Image (cartoon, rainbow, N blue to C red):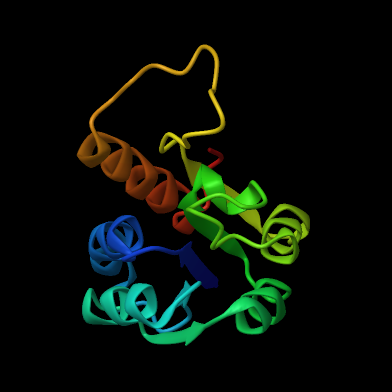
Length: 142
């Protein structure tokens, strides 16, 4: 299973997701945990958190998403021009159209309001995302 974490800016959310997911991958040779950053800082922080491999930039993100089984990241990853413009229309389209299951964390975006979403601390959202990954890895429905 190829699990891809997409993030931008400083990669803080992606690094937290990887840190929570990494123990789920221990001893499972068939799981590859990849960090895809919109910039080198984001990729570097996700690699330091324990991702198996990483790549940076629009082309790397768009290309790698074609082979992902599971994609994690902030909701902004599917919104063109989110993260202060780091999410290009091509990246947003690649994430949204990837055949992979997507687990997107509802981190607020200044220009988008998600109606009906309960406000929760980021740490709790990351734990919920990791729990969803665990269910998927273990073959149970979300």
